[in-house]
Image (cartoon, rainbow, N blue to C red):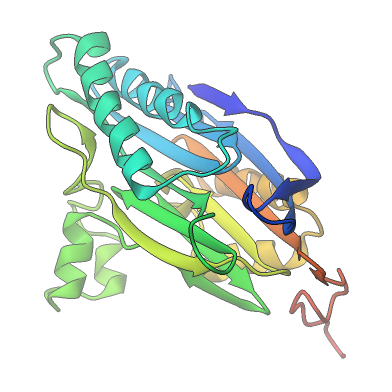
Length: 279
């Protein structure tokens, strides 16, 4: 397990160096080994403008080495005034070389998922750049609705996409843990990228599959909706995953967007999209 960066509450950041626009964010990252694993092979980085989770795989300590290499390289982008897609591609390529060197010869090889967001200061309007390799995920919770932003690179996702199985069948499929794309294994990393508006009142969740194995989207939405802060949401999600079964390492990053320039989130229950019983 490797942790890079520090958690923060209501941190104001310059969107890009050539303008006065500021954004106000809170973020909280948390990881747990779970109840059935001996080691934690998840790693994370929270170092604006980059936030990411990596879930390692491979025999013995290989997965931990792989995820650590990825977040170590991504952390090199922390503190920069701008981060491009080419920058992310470059450091992930460097991470593949690091994994080969650090892990050495292993029976199963060494690799890791990686998923996260960066603040895209190259865009005309405030934007997140979402990137993903593997089956860790990025979600958005906004105005009462949860959306999965990333698409899993997995065998079961391919079967769902082709209509071979249903989402319900995917949950119990024997190949549920088999991914089709990773960082490592001496292959060039190929992330999927998408853009997402960066807007006040938005809450993002970045997580390893140790969370999504234990909580449904309905459960994730409930806990994101009812917890008042990024820290409370992150701690609750990890706690609930462990209470369900905790079969895997669990890692989450929750990011709250409080303000973008003069546009702010009022922080009211109504603005957050939370519905109260009897209201």
